[in-house]
Amino acid sequence: MKLLKCITQISLIFLCCNMFLPITLVSANQDIEIQLDAYIESYLKEYQVPGASVAIVHNNEIYYSKSWGITGESEEQVTTETPFTIGSISKSLTGLAIMKLIDENIIELDDPVQKHIPWFKLEDKHVVAQITIKHLLTQTSGFSTYTGLSISDKESKDFGAIKKYVESLTNVNLTALPGEKHQYSNANFLILGALIEEVTNQTYAEYMGKNVFAPLGMKGAAADYKTAYEKGYRSGYQSWFGLPLKSSVTYDNGGAPYGYIAANVEDLVKYIKLLSGKDFKNFLSGNMMDSYLTPHIQTGENRYYGLGIRISNPDAQDKMIWHSGSTPDSHSEMFYIPKTDWGGVILTNKNNQLEEEGLYYLKIGIINILNGDEPVDIPDNTLILQFIILGFICLLFGIYIYLLLKTKLEKTRKNGLWAGVGIFCLIFAIVLLPLIVYFLGAPWHAIKVFSPDVALLTIITITLLAFIGLTAIRISFRNKK
Image (tube, rainbow, N blue to C red; front, side, top):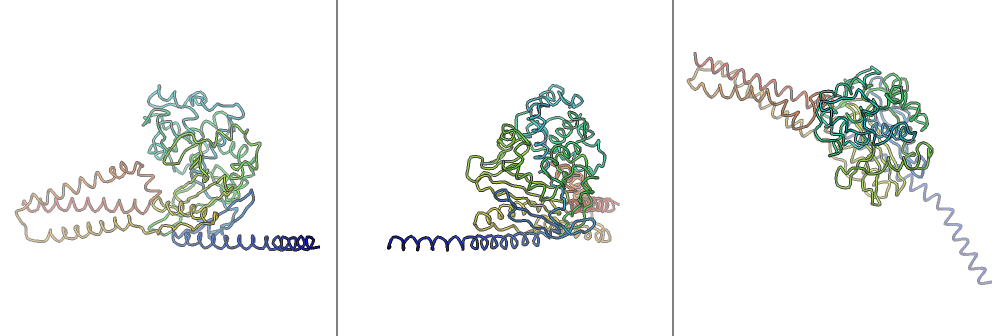
């Protein structure tokens, strides 16, 4: 009897625990959701982001999904079905399309690019023949970041834009031999986009729609201007001194392979499910999927590049498969962590090159919250560089006013000083822009669309330097009279 009584008591305790366990889990999930809401909204407020959408996946199910704010042009309410341009996450989808073509024995990973695109030429005919599909996917072809940016964000609505941009590389010299080193370049994925068009006799947008988006159930995704707008894409906002202003840069058909695919969070959740290996198992063979996600080249401490995808800490518990992306008016993050089976996507419709660090910290903070850790502090959007340049502009403006007043003062015989000041300022005005382009490793067009406020301040600085130079020389000549 005592044994029976003991068993009965244990059974009752076990039953009670199981009764309260779902309530405990629901309560814990609600706490995490509240924490995520507060954390994400603090970022959106600090960076004054007009519209955003976030989704988190766990155990192949949507764990969290929420949208905030409005779109650009028409100021429509953002929902989980609102497409954003996803920036360089597009590269991972272009890489996926290439792996599908390899899986179907249409191309091979180590094929020379010229085997499939005979019209693809560079200044050095011998070197261009050595570039393979794998070199392009791993960003080791020898094309520089600068070269890629020089043919990016051109706002073309032409369906032939991809081929046109690749043809414009004819006079380009590589900055490294193929396979020698990793250089992140949009040029690599533009060429892959052209290769897809060449071997399939379809436009890049058509092939992606039929062979990638449709099989994965990415109903809101598009790779051309017309289709993207039909599915609800609207341009976002460029950041001017931290404030969102409706974008002056429009969708670029030629940029789809490296950065202008449009998709919503529901679409990218489908992509994450593919990465997890739990859905769409027939999309690629096991060998192809393994190759796609294999770290092929090291890009930093514990950071690697696969075939269009990034991998961090590949041999550790916190291994992460991810990619970030930005266009002049959008910024995005996507990640999947195999060990914990957490995956997520963050889409926002405001960008400035100087603000991109904030979204990276938001991603890390979200992962910490999901793991039960404290979220990281998101950096303040302090506009330090803009204020430094503004301070310099104020100084230059003060000098210019002084010189204007100087022209009315009594003439002096010390003429050489003003001539020297004038010549120095004119030379500085002439070389400042080339120096900025050189040190940043980016063409002026890219600086202008990704940091328009800094570009404007730079032009004002150059203008003031030129005016100071001319005025100082004018004073010098007047004194000589």
